[in-house]
Amino acid sequence: THEAHIDKEDDQIQDQSDETTTVEAEAEIKPQNEMIQVVSMDDTEKQQFLETIASLESQLMQREEQLASKSDQITSLTLQSEAETAKLRQVITETKDEAKKRILRAKERVEEMQTKLTDAVRRADAAGGSNQEQSDIINALRAEGEQ
Image (cartoon, rainbow, N blue to C red; front, side, top):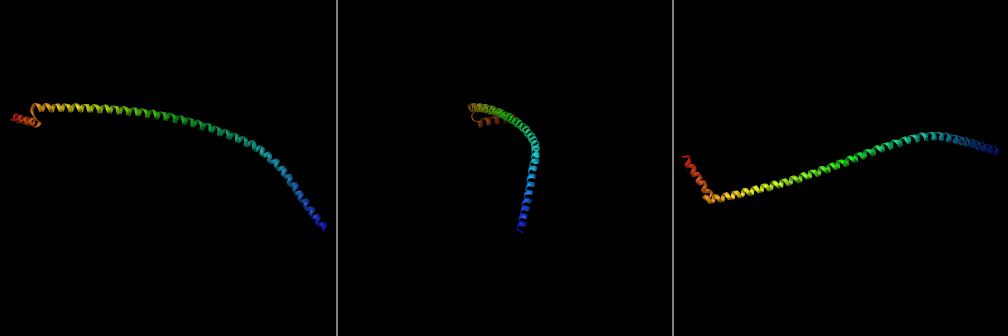
């Protein structure tokens, strides 16, 4: 029985050894098959990656061109805005200067009128007394003219 037990263990070891050999053999075949697939996948993947990189580079160039264009537009609009602002400030300055001149002319006219009025009042006072006296004389003359 002891020998039978040893024979059984030898058979189990042999079976395990056969299984291991079969698994090892399959493992050797499988990686070679996978390597073939991986190599062919690598070429395909490399091609896809190269195409993707080329596409991304193209998109990047387009974006850079768009950004450069937008930058030029912004610069142009900024310069245009600054020019318009300067022009408007010049118009404001000219308008203020014109307003100051008009105000000075108006003040001069008011002063002239004030001077003329003062002179007229003096002459009237010298000629016939007060304004009330002049009004009374005018009313009396009108009353005579109506009769």
